[in-house]
Image (cartoon, rainbow, N blue to C red; front, side, top):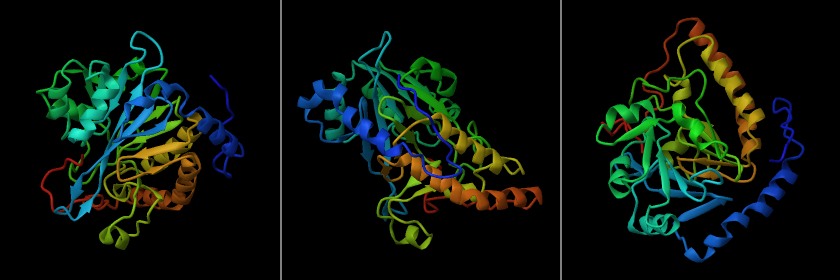
Length: 320
């Protein structure tokens, strides 16, 4: 593979970003050329060997479409070369299922379905019924709340199976196994890096809202801008002095280790081409807030438990 200097994101934007994006764009469609005749209408090609399905997920009694997503990765090498990995799950419309079946030969070429967010569980049973021959992997909570699925293993414990195509991380300073309270602590999830397409797939840790509704605008959200999940100021990070600073270091380390252009967020949109620079801007601008959270925790002041509940009208903790 191509070796690239990451540069430092603490001091400014990486100088080689424009060149890297240009090279990525030139490569984007090369390995997907043999699939051009499939006429896939609901699958968005993010980059080489990586697609995304964007599905509806309505909250606040149907007033706002928070949306959600599913990723599709074509395996580049090994015994499953040419088969596909599914990241997370969405409720498939007939059109989405048609496209997925065209891409995967009616599901015969789906090697695995991988759960990435503890509370993105709703669509897994239906996907398991549709594609029972695929191997299913999930977060610890997937394995606990969906016993009707024959799970092959836990996602992070199994991540070596999908190297070198994918790398995976979970945020430092946050609870991944059993987040509480379940209604509002949706901060942690598996963040997936697909090297070939230079793309990150992330559920709730990072948000990019497309045309946020009135309620979210009143809360300060702007269209097309990256945010950390609101629970970062509530129960999302451990109530310790170290946790906010651990998370800050985690993001800077991710920026140094992963050379990506695109960030695909579940809710509700993506940042394409300049995702790495946008995430660097977000963590730099969040440093004062994280410092305050560290100081708050050091003084034993409890964080607000409901901060991060995106749908107070719902009784279920599931968010996708």
